[in-house]
Each structure stands twice: as C-alpha cells, then as structure tokens.
Image (cartoon, rainbow, N blue to C red; front, top):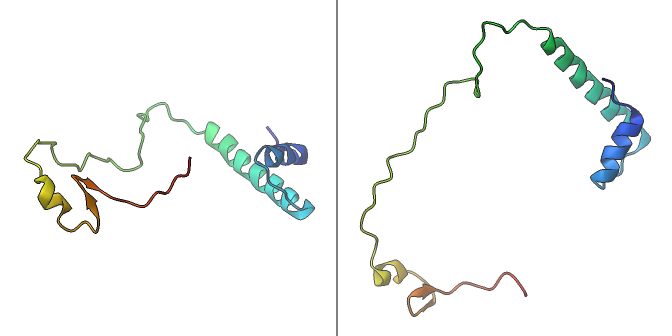
Length: 96
C-alpha cells in the first residue's frame, strides 16, 4: 500500500495542520518508507515464536495493597497554608 501526497494532505487537514510542499513530499516519502519496512516484516516466518507484549519480560513492581491507618485530619493539614475546616484551600483554576 502506497501513501500518496493527497493522503498526507487529507490527514494533515483532519489534524488541522498546514504543511509546505516540501514537508508534504518529505512526509509522503517517510511514511512510504515505514510501510515498506512493515511489508518486509510481513514476510518473516514467526510460526515458532510465542506472542509477546514487551521486548523484555516485565513484572509488576508494585507493593501489595495493604490497608493501614491514615493520618489524622489535623496532622494532614498542619502544613497547609490556608486550611478551611478539614479541607485544603486551593486556588480556583476552572471558571464556570
């Protein structure tokens, strides 16, 4: 499958990007090079290769989730610049 200049322009339009003629030609060439490489990979014999999700065997490195006692409210708020009752007061960042 070949990527045409028109395909690149269409995708750029969908992404609301504007490219010069040189950039469009460059991206067309680069995308076609990538697709050529994937075509080569299609021809590799993988019949005896087990599927994998990572190149390296990755294990979960997290600790067990063991519930414990939490800090008392006053201890949690002791370094807060402006606590309000039992809450942290923070600046408003979203205007409604």
